[in-house]
Structure formats: C-alpha cells, structure tokens
Length: 100
Image (cartoon, rainbow, N blue to C red; front, side, top):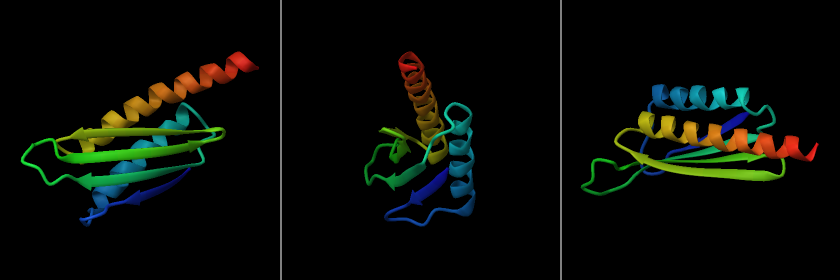
C-alpha cells in the first residue's frame, strides 16, 4: 500500500511520519487490496486542547473510505482513525463475502 502524508501549515517530524505509516500498514491484515492511503495531518488554530486533526482517505477497489478524527495528539488521533478503518474494512469484507 502506498501512503501519501500531507502536513499543511507545519513540518512533521520523521518519527511522526514513521508512526503513521507503521499504523496504517497494519490495516493490510484486515484487507489486502488497499490501493493507497492519503493522510492529512492538520493543526487547528483554536484554544481547544483537541486541535490535532487526522483525515485518512483509504482507496480500495470499488470504494473509498474516509475517516476524520480529532485528538490532543496526532498519535492518539491516528490510533482512533485506524480503529475506525479496521471496523469499516471488516464490514466491507463481510459485504464482499455475501456477494460471492
């Protein structure tokens, strides 16, 4: 799976980028036909503590899955996104099995 990470308005550290790629690569256990993942890491300019936003667009044959989460840290938001994507990929796989 190809991972494309974009960080508008700030420079992400290599550790964060590696963390994102590592977490997303685990999704292939649940669905092995992921084409690519577009990841957007954003910092919202607010007084709120939960100002880190992670959006992931996962491209799979026939569908795209989009998940957006906000958290205090990018790591926390990525974990939330990966959990949501896991659920959706499992659901997608079940639907596919129903058609076979």
